[in-house]
Length: 107
Image 1 (cartoon, rainbow, N blue to C red):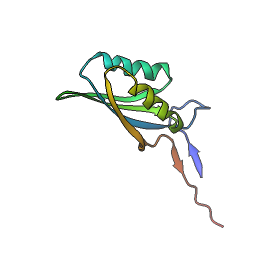
Image 2: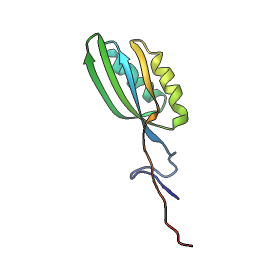
Image 3: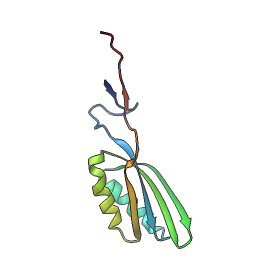
Image 4: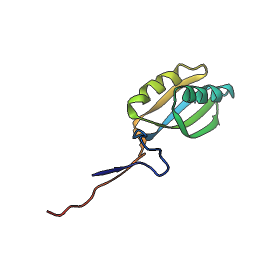
């Protein structure tokens, strides 16, 4: 089995995946700044961000590049922010980061 990092990854980069989180938030523009700031300060790379207004609030869809072991901490930090009502995500929401290929070997 050979493990290959995505194209453009620096040498020595840790193997990570893109994790998708869904946040229920109040419809306040400042919540976007708070979420982005937490990701930046804690060294999580944002891969995608979508803000949808809904009746009674808003939904924020966040894709972050991170090792799975660090994801629970990020969920905790985001859930602690002002105007964040709920955070959903987890292992089932992971998109593959590195490409894994198996080399066929004949015996």
